[in-house]
Each structure stands twice: as structure tokens, then as C-alpha cells.
Image (tube, rainbow, N blue to C red):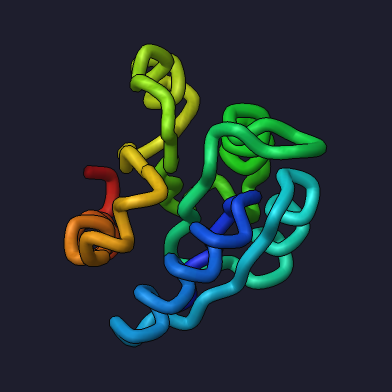
Length: 128
């Protein structure tokens, strides 16, 4: 399955790519919001892992663009955030299917929790 990873931190992007690839996912990566929208439209991934804080277009803005485009509206989007989830309700309203709190240590301690979240979303019945 194809996953679009949108993360501006080179370290976290590389570490997350390695974890997802090792788990058998095909990974496409973007480092900014504009590229994320373009790649989502071109590749129609099974899941988008979307950082909240991005250059060029913020994660919440990317989410709204994707959910308002019929060609990408059905793709589940899990928000990656290093911030508190104070905006969680609005992001869910805008179409996010879940959240994952990231930190520089999250992958150093093992990628299991991220991979479990990805598996849970991809294996869930539609519209859940």
C-alpha cells in the first residue's frame, strides 16, 4: 500500500520512511504543503500522514484542500503533530481521521506505535 508522508523535518521524514518501508509500505514523501497536494493528486495514496506545521501551506490548509477535492477527498489523513491537540476537534471536523503525536524520540524508541496507528487506519472499514 502507498503512503504519502508529509514532514518538513529531514530527520523525522527519513526515520519514518525507513519504518514504513520496513513494514512493507511504499512511501512517497513531501517536505511542504504545496508538494503534498500535488503528490496526493498524482499518486492517490492509501493514507496520508500529514504534519501540522509545514512550509508553503500549513497542514490544516492541506487537509481542507484535499477534503474539498473529489479526487482526494476519500483518502484518510492522519495528522502528525508535535503540539498539543488543542485543534483536534476542528481538524476532525475538516476531515482528519486521526492524530499521532510526534517527537524526535518517537522513532528512536521504536516505530511500533506509529505503525500500529497506520495499520489501524488502513485496516478499518470505510467511513469509520
